[in-house]
Length: 296
Image 1 (cartoon, rainbow, N blue to C red):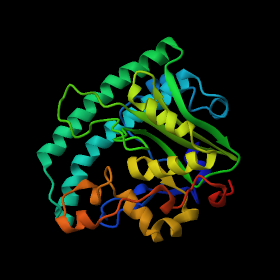
Image 2 (image 1 turned 90 degrees about the horizontal axis):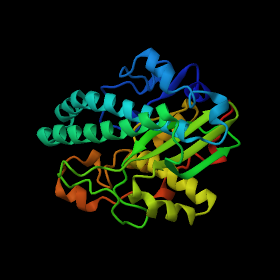
Image 3 (image 1 turned 120 degrees about the vertical axis):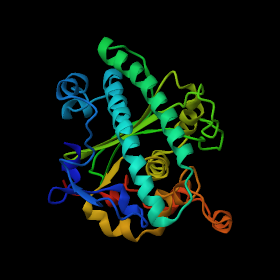
């Protein structure tokens, strides 16, 4: 439903279009294959996600049940992606010559999976019991135009806007639970729903919530757009902006950052790391603004 809104001749661009060094995955795909995964049966899919996969429900104010459905589906997709990455990083290492500590990567993935499973239990309980007052909304707006990008993803922010640590991602303690925020950009017919939220148990995001509340509406959209490319991986472009995406070097650099480090955070010559300047929100096109809108 969402991808159909931004598709051109049934196809959308994958985020890998920002990765110049990776040529082993499809850069565009049909909407029936994009974002699909096989970690849930058809019956459970119908049972757990009936609210947010409904157009009318999405265009109304979000309920906690609907937010839990978005969060749960996002976690299931991340579990699927972590499995795919094992093979992908092997290929990337052979092609690029980058130095990868494979054992550390595998260990990091296991820690991620443990965090995902913990959060999934929370969201399942909210859905099953229709619990109230479970989420804090950072941003939720219905834009009166169709954006050329669709997003549904969890985010584990390292630092807030002012640089204060939210998640100590470099701490190897397996008992340290990473706190997750969720983001969605849903183009629907002639409108786009943009949302950012987190569960109230994840209190480290309170400073981020306060900082966002102090911004103007345009600055909020600019920072959300920045976070999509700096911190997420589950987004799709309309082919109407293909030239902009392929030709914007700042956008490519940001799409390959990992917590501010270039080349997906993989080790490179020290000179490259020292010379690299982290991309800022105002240095990339803001695809959430009306100048990039597409006709649906």
